[in-house]
Length: 265
Image (cartoon, rainbow, N blue to C red):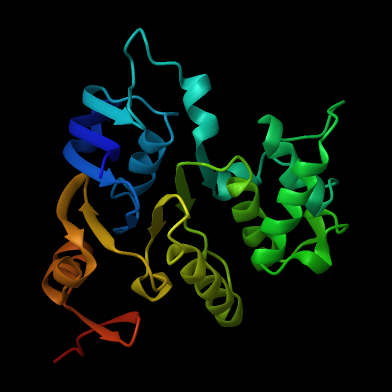
């Protein structure tokens, strides 16, 4: 399998502080990764590197065969091959647009409708992705009137619209209640198990948000990788305790993970 993402000795430094420090990490075609870590650990920085919107201060970053910062690399050709769903993107989208329009604009790399003429195939694709995420009944709803869960599902459909080779999900379950979280996890699990779905990287704080079908985990703390590899070997009580800085017990029940702190003595 070829590498979808390859970081070699990558550091990102801002105002004298390393957001990520000497990171080497690769994601291969077909893998589904979860990035776990506390606030400020460097999770979003890794995702921004993977999206090509952030360049390393030192080291090399190669995405879908293109090395960032080299003369031959064209990020404007690269970015349509990467789908991204997260709070930052949601804030750029006009609240007055319908759900269907919000997804359709991704076909042209736009955030708002202008004078584009969408092909029938574009609308069919948008409707199919929205249906897959349980949003068929919301096609004509204004994006700004959606609940948090409905908005997250719309954003994932939008990220899939360009048939990306790499799908990046930035805390997709953040702000959801229990029902909304479980509904989203179930749908992400269906996507993650689809052999035709793109390689995936998801950032989260909570192991409970890891959907079945995700294969690998990266644990990061203070900009440094503590562990990275298959979920079964790397998502351990020891590793998670080191990552979050307190004693934690990780358990796997069926296809789901849970974590809790040890009781105070």
